[in-house]
Image 1 (cartoon, helix red, strand yellow):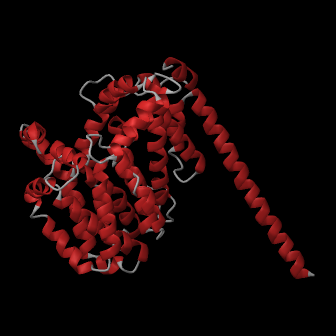
Image 2: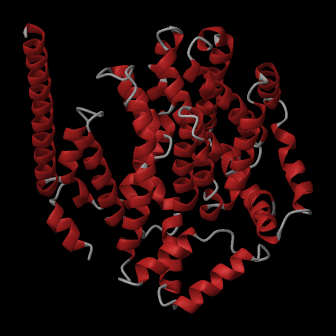
Image 3: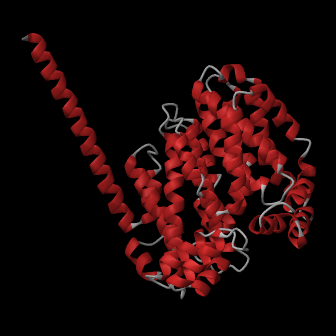
Length: 421
């Protein structure tokens, strides 16, 4: 009898606690949604107080979509301007026009490299010729996979309301921020790849290879990512070999362009066009010239993130015995060895290896978070992140100013929606 009463009392208390959490969660959601209607940016700032809550993630998602919807694509030097031109060119496509483009793409003998933007253009043009709806759609897909990836970090028990956690959260997000819908193809594929890789490495769910396999449809360069994933799955047991390969990769980046030029002769037409875009004509030399014309301090600050991230890899390698004590940490460590070897080998190809470096950052951040108590130097290095990334942050702020509607940060939801119709 007494045991039965004790169980009933315990169950009642548990149900009460669950109801309280539900009520608190519901009240938080209603509060945040109310603020979002009155002042969307204010709701975003308010949601930063608790990065673990579902209501905060909903606000982050809604704000990202609103950012896309209010995106100003008038800077001719940005990719977004070209996307709008492309949208205006294809907005009157019929279903026959669209399917014809898809059939040509599937021949793998055309200059059509991927079909993501073409498909988004076609879908949006069925309901509107307003490019703001197009960038809203870009933001929906981008933000969905970004936030699904971000969950892997904030749901860790090691993630807390602390300066270290928030610095790591910032770097995770800054590796591929919502601004990057400006160059939507590569960076949308990036978050899809990162989410797939978290599922494959952390959750051991190899079915997400199928999700990763759609990334070349968004940006054809992700064929190389699929190759790296397969390398990791097949050869992840060879720790020492990958450490040697990673350390060797520092010294061979300069021959990467010559190797790619050789492989070009055997590639399909669409791949050949991609390789040409990265390594030949004026494109390569213009990019190298731009870097060469920078002042010395800018050159140093530009390469500092790469040096810092590779320095963290050296710290991980040196402390790999401690990392091995955590199965999840060691899994991520082995993937990073494979991935960073690929990045370093392709670093000499402008807009290729350097861009793929961004995909390593979420995994480096994750590994720091779950091992920093065992590897104390990681905490000290984390405090350097705002300094190391100060130059990219400066350019990000400038770029955000150039494409953001000022009212996004000042006005209410109804005004923003009507203003951009």
